[in-house]
Amino acid sequence: MKRWAVVLLPGLLLYFLPIPEFTGPQRHLLAVFVATIIALVAQPVRMGVTVVVAMTLLALTGTLPPAKVLSGFSNVTVWLVFTAFLFARAVTQTGFGTRVGYLFIRRFAHSPLSLGYSIAAADLSLAPFIPSDTARGGGMVFPIARSVATAFGSEPGPTSGRMGAYLMLVAFHATYTGSAMFLTGMAANPLIAEFAQKIAHVELTWGTWFTGAIVPGMISMLVVPWLISRLARPEIRDTEPARAHARQELARMGPLQRNEKWLMAIMGCVMAGWVTFPWHGVYNTFVALAGLSAILLSRVLTWEDLLAEQKAWDALIWFAVLVMMADQLNEIGVIRILSVKLFGLMGRMPWQLLLFVLVASYCYIHYAFAGMTAHVTALYPGFLGAALAGGVPPMVAALPLAYFSNLNAAMTHYGTGSAPVYFGAGYVRQGDWWRIGFLISVVNLAIWMGIGMWWWKLVGIIRR
Image 1 (cartoon, rainbow, N blue to C red):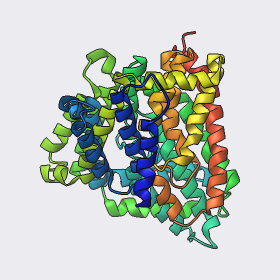
Image 2: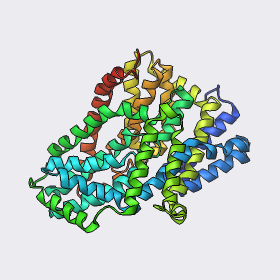
Image 3: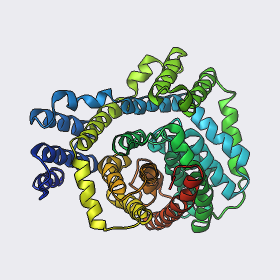
Image 4: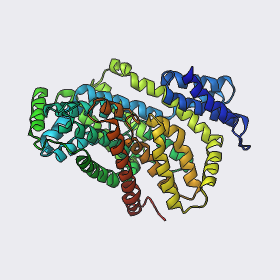
């Protein structure tokens, strides 16, 4: 009952919010939306149950017509996320992701720092194809980092400082950074692109997203492992046991199998299709669906595998409803009204300062969230609207908020799905996790809002 009170009370309070511009339907939709977001965080029931109840309430109360309530299921962004989850299953099921991780370790792990870089590079190489840092970091990279730590005799407790604490921190911070660099790196990133198109009227294609992220992202990938090597210095300096372990695992796996070869070829073609969108004009979703069709026809995955991928079907349901509500909030003017109110509280700042304040606020509000998608759905449209109202150019308003929808996971051990996995291994104490995470969040702000702004001017994202 307490959890339900936490969910329902804010929605009721928002319904009576003293904003005279709000009409009845606007109040109804905002109340249901906020209660849904809080339910996604508090989780009195499963996410799918929450959004089905919300969708039903909107229809039964007449807040939205039935066609609008179901419109999320016709959204191309929703189907891109669904397809990407199936790519993740293919990468995991074939063993290709594990092979990539061990290949990087065998080739590059010549010192603790280069070992950290090899773990980060393994995650980065998988990020374009696996839109879940939980699946990629927690399900694929974490087991590799854990087995490497064990090879050094580093276990939770007295021996954690030998290598395990360092590897857990590097792997975790590489995971969300990789998510930030690709439109397909995190489940909510395509949703962000949808918001940017609807609210700011800018097209965040795969290529545009990656172009804006490549320089600040690679700098973060270089600086953060080095910083962690100073803040959580590994006691062991000889990394040959890690390379030996990787060689043993690769020998056990043997040469590339048929399904891995097919998957490599298909993923390469999908990546090429995403990158060349400006030339052929085929939407990312249908490039991905073409890749999924090839995966099924080549029997890398079977139809039974597709039906058994519960996370994909779960995401299809709750994601579609969240997209629908967010679209309707924008369509009936709720986002515009709230954005004007928010900007009015900030006064008349230069747009550069306003953007930094908004991005930093957006980042550190994540202390109150236990997931990335809930944060994006609840706050990205409002913060983007406030930036636009303050005179920030549309593309440069959309991109930093998009990147920090991933980078905001740095601070806590619950802020994204992979964080509890790495933290739960027991190598890093909570105080150290939060202290190091906060310092890295400051470094990321400096890199992405400093060097990033310079880079965006250089490539023409900022035109004035």
